[in-house]
Length: 526
Image 1 (cartoon, rainbow, N blue to C red):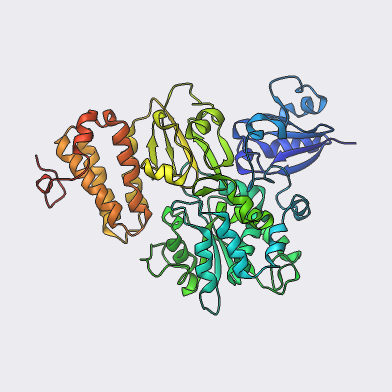
Image 2 (cartoon, rainbow, N blue to C red):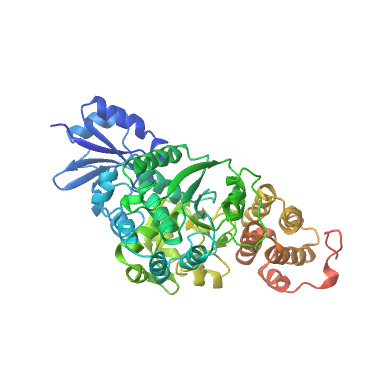
């Protein structure tokens, strides 16, 4: 009997040779099955062999090593990580949304059901829409994007709205630096997302859904489309969801790579075939969304938490986490980090536990200087803030945000002033251009930071920079311009020396700006 060997088909594993390893194993007579990545990206390709003890993993396997792996030559070395489920890095996690990722074949619907899949949808179909929304509200589930808005409130607004048709839209335009959880979940367990979206439809009375998926994710696009076809073939989607008589149709739409389409109203514009441009609110998408109809807009991680909420009950989900941050979050460790990958744990774990405990510090071996949490518009935090719990309110009080859970690590060679400049430059390039604070403010921001770093009227330009940041924060139509000041301010607060400024000067100019400090043309006065 041939060995049964699991080889990840996740894009991260494929990029380091997983397909070639799978081909070599097949040629050697093994039965090869393809799974999603377990999320331990520094070990990829992580090959797992079925044994009586469980699935035993072998790290960084190359095609030339396949014969030795099957012969047992790698069993006693460091390359063998033992039973993968017992591997400490993985065993310390609390996987809810990622419970099946890396465990089953991504489009095996039978395996999905065997491991608890569709239980939430089946229960939802026995409840009224009001009761389904109440479970989501009671769970404390909040949007796993930037604002952390309660999902139940958004769903209730759509449920009670009057309309001839309603929509559920999943924003899978995962554009933040250091984030890859959406992609990994879609590539490793797409039925979880499909089930979450279908429950949202049942709860709100929606009949049509779309997943807006970025073009840079070709593996995810193929996997999700195949899973949707299988869901239709087995009655999970279509005219009568699981024989309930309720209709829900789902399709994938591929974006063209605009960062701004991660903002919900820009995404809706793009879905309608228009230029991805922010809409002024109100009206909110829950009332006037896709094609002017009530629309649920959530991201992948939010919708993928929903099946557990309905299967086990809102109270069970609410029992996880801390404060107003309930449940689990999928954190992504990237950048200059020794052990990069996906960590799903309850809210409340500290930043230091993630960076040092799971991440193992920097890959370079140099000291950590800063981590950026929440994407390119998130704050830069020094090791002195590693005691911060991963909690929406705790991060907000610290002038930071959890965002999509991306954590990018930098060692002591990082130039915080250059990174602050990059934030403004990034905003200038990616802005939709609709509002002046974002479009012009970011351009002026690059110029002002250049003057500060160049030693030109430094104190006056620091005041001007703070004033510019305040204008962008308060005056921008969306979070693109509104959050760009966050990395700039945090870099200046924690690393003033990288701007050529001493800490005392930076503190002195922070806050209110004297009217005489700026000129009408945006330049600074002495």
